Length: 339
Image 1 (cartoon, one colour):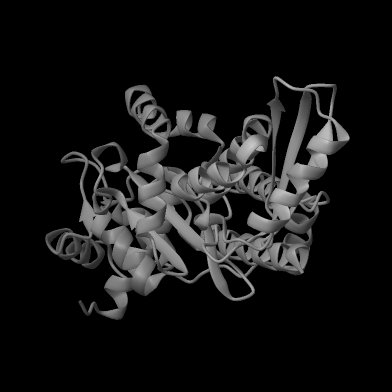
Image 2 (cartoon, rainbow, N blue to C red):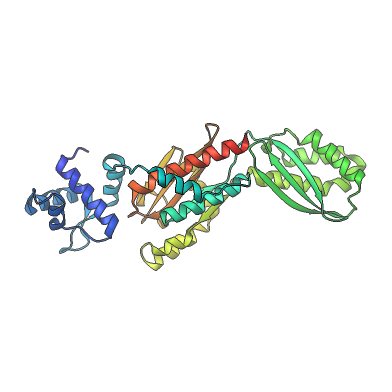
């Protein structure tokens, strides 16, 4: 939809002033924004037309105007001038992301926490999953005669571990037999190839060793299955308490506890950057919220997502560049760590 230059400027001014102050914007305020070069009557007429087109709403008869969700959509798609992050702001974000361990999941947790601090919104990230990832290393760390920790590392740098308890002592002979099975059946295997059927066939092929090796093999399979499943990292849920009414905040918090629903929401967002405003969300709990999701990559391939859930009155022009920069930083750090 084409708007005149003046109507575009009026719409931008209303949206940005409402985002900044949370109060309806009147014609007198806009006159000042135009240095009193446009009359109050002209501005009121333009505001009325913008309301008829669905871009503005009036909370009550004597109030100024506020953006509608359609107004926010037009602003984000057509009118918004994204703020450019300064070099000092970029350095500050880098310093907040103190990634040292080499564990991708820790990086995503840190990135989600940093994003919550930057945006004052709830943040959501998906853990790293790549269907082409393979098992690159398995380590058995003994803790006692019948207890050990199994550690699995994938070709994409994911590290998972789990405690395993056995009914038999972990002798050198048993450990050697386990590593033989791992080398023959797991190292180099795709993480999504370890199925119930393959495990049953493997155990059946072990003969007399099956009884003693089964707990270790089952634990290894459980770790691999956990790696193959996308998980959700949530941070900043308390920021939602500042959004709208207490009832709406409670509804949002309950919604965020539904992990499978959140996974679907993130997986539905396929573009590099996705901005979903208010009732564009298919879930009623998000009807007064905006969801911004950016995809992160590893070596140029889509690997997961990082984003925010906040009020429709968020500062899109400032937050979107921060999300894009942080996502690019995560992509770079993950690619370097895996190399």
